[in-house]
Amino acid sequence: MDAIYPYAIFLHNLMRWLVLIFLGIALLRAVPGWLGDRQWRPGDDAAGKRLTMATDLQLLLGLLLAGVSPLVRVAMQDMGAAMKDPSLRYWSVEHTALMLLAVILIHIGRARSRRPVADRVKHRRAAVYFGLALLAILAAMPWQWLAANGRPLIPELPF
Ligand code: HEM
Image 1 (tube, rainbow, N blue to C red):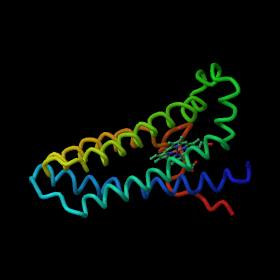
Image 2: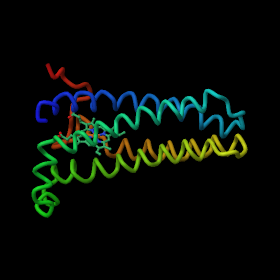
Image 3: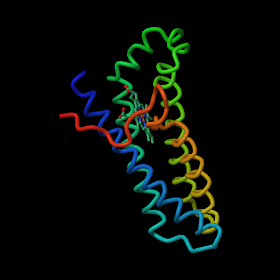
Image 4: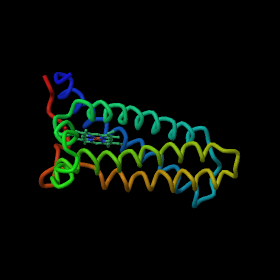
């Protein structure tokens, strides 16, 4: 299982850009759609679908990482001690919990914007839930410039 780790890290790192791009596209459709009272089009639904699929893939990679990451393994051996270690706490709780929240918000946003309601309400729901998800993702991202937990913006090849 340890051999999987560098590949999972590589893919999980790269996939974040796909999630951010699809989230940006969905928001750029939803916010003006809401404020401009635009009709809900098939492209709006497709943007939500693409975003949900990419996010689910990222979630799967994250769950895989939670199983093979040496950092999470150490944290799980003694959660009490891990909570006192900023780096172990970040990976085992903060990153994971906030990202899970973002995944849930994206799913709720997509589901609620597909209900049979006025087009303006569909756009508004997508805008609000996807916007909140973006905030959670930006807050939980291990940006390169974060001292202890920063990770490269573009990962190195694992082979
Ligand atoms: C949209 C959601 C997510 C984004 C954008 C994201 C982003 C990232 C990034 C950029 C890294 C650093 C990769 C590297 O070291 O090169 C990372 C690491 C990690 N993520 Fe996520 N993540 C997300 C969701 C999740 C979820 C839901 C989980 C757990 C269920 C998770 C668990 C982890 C773990 C365990 C690590 C590796 C820690 C280590 O061993 O270095 N992530 N994530």
